[in-house]
Every structure is written in structure tokens, then in C-alpha cells.
Amino acid sequence: MAVASGFIFPDQPDICLYSCVGLVLKSFIVDNVIDGFNRNKYFVIVTTKEKEACDFIHNILHRGATISKCTGSFTGEEKSMITTVLNRAQAGMLKKYLKEIDPSAFTVITSSSDIVGKGFRIVS
Image 1 (cartoon, rainbow, N blue to C red):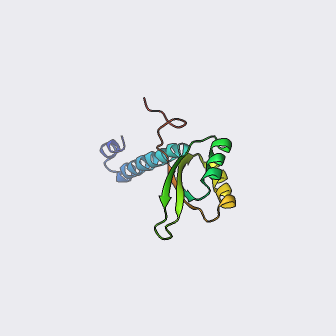
Image 2 (tube, rainbow, N blue to C red):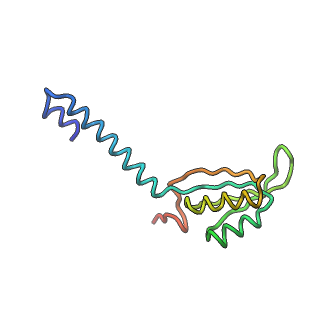
Image 3 (tube, rainbow, N blue to C red):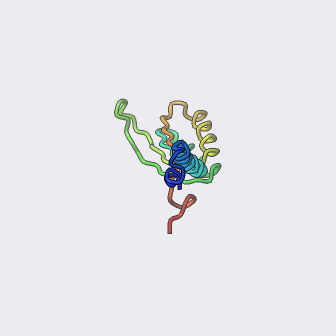
């Protein structure tokens, strides 16, 4: 439709240009708004307080987590790596809790809008 305006109004190329720019902006904005509704936070937490962190994730946030044993490459210290996915409100609660129980925890938080699995989107 936007390109067709160039043929309908050949003496007014600005109409075609505005139509094309509007189409691109509309699709960009709509895609970002829809992705914003599905936005979750993926956590990777390296800590020695895995029991406390997982208890909070399970009992307060009502989410699951995966624990992997790992070794720090610099210190050689044995630690646990916890991975979990939370919504934005839960993410804020977990960040605050981790700061209280283990200020030295290493945490990577990534935004993600495409989570498939129990408690999130189910693909049939």
C-alpha cells in the first residue's frame, strides 16, 4: 500500500516516502511493544550460598532453578552456578535478596522474550 501511493500520487513523492517510513516505524514499534509484554530475565548466579538462593527462588518466587557445580578459574574455589528465569518483578526481588545474602555473588542478568517451557510459553 505504501509503495502504491507512489503510483497513485506520482507528482507527490513525499507521500510515498512518508507512507514507507510510517510502515517501518509502525512495525518496529508494534514488535517492540509485543516483545515487551513477554520480556523476562534470565539469571546466571555464581555463589557459595546456593541453598539460601534456591530456597528463595522456590518458596518466595515460586520458580524453578538449575544448579551446576563449578570451579573459579582464578581462585580455584568450588562454587555453584544457578540458572533461572523470572519476570521483571521477581527479578528485582531476587537481585535485592542476593545482595543481602551474598554481596560477592557474581550475577549475569539477560533480558529474554522467547522462553519456552513450563510456567512460560508452551509450544504445541
